[in-house]
Length: 151
Picture 1 (cartoon, helix red, strand yellow):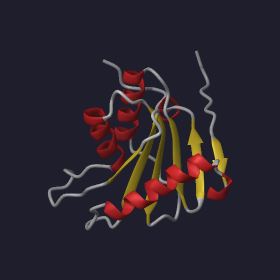
Picture 2: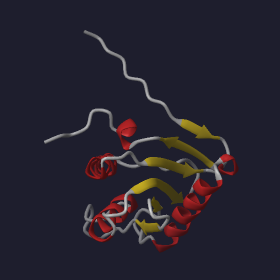
Picture 3: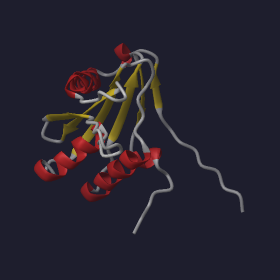
Picture 4: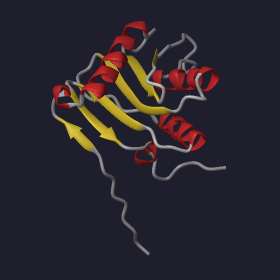
C-alpha cells in the first residue's frame, strides 16, 4: 500500500517578515555564533531557545581536534537545557550560522534530540531555521523527523 507524507511549513523571504518575537530569537542565535569554536570547519552555528517563562537561552557549536568529538549548537543548548532549565518548557527554537549564505538546518542527531525534548515536555517546539536573510519555520520537530527512532 502506498501512502503519502505531506509537511507544512512557513517560508519567509526576508527576516524582516518574521514576527518581532521571532526576530529577537533569531538575533540571539546569530549572536551565539560569535561564541562558536569552529577552527576546522570555519562554520559557526548558534542556537537560541525561548522558554515558557520568557527567558532566552543560547549556545554555539564546538569542534575538537579529535573529530567527530565536537558538538552541534543545537545539542549543546538542548543538553544544557535538560540539566538546568527542564522545568521551563521550550516554546520556540532558532538556529543561525556564520557564514550565513543559506538557511541552517539541524542534522539528524539534532532533529532526534529536539524531538526527544518535545516528547519529554509533552508539547511541540516551533523551530526557526534562518540564514541568508531568509527563514523556514516548522511547528514541531516531528515535521523534521517524521519517521522517528523510538525505543
